[in-house]
Picture: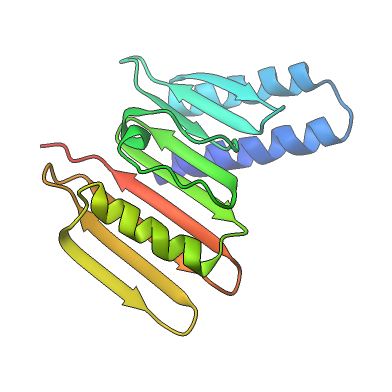
Length: 166
């Protein structure tokens, strides 16, 4: 699995650099789609305009990497929406979501933790803080797990959601 993720990230970097060089975006996208498809065995859609790569396997499962819009998968629908800051990276599937935001203030992180708790993520709570790093992790009653990690120095917030499966 790690090999596939590395291939996807390298391919995304290739698309972005080829597109930046002014070479045909569509040609670059198709070449990278073919390379990733051969490596992962899934159908691949590369979108160099928003910097995203979407992989769909033969069972219909999809995963997307990149982009700057709030994700829309089943996993993402469980995440209370964070409205401050700017989304810089998204990794999304129906069982796992990762959202990274920049330009986040500590007060916004603190308010978000309360919002997460109010959404029912209070089982097995774990809170950690240091000089400028804060983390909140908990599950809901269905064992779906959320984590919010905030670095006050960089103003970066990372939110992850893992959907429970038996």
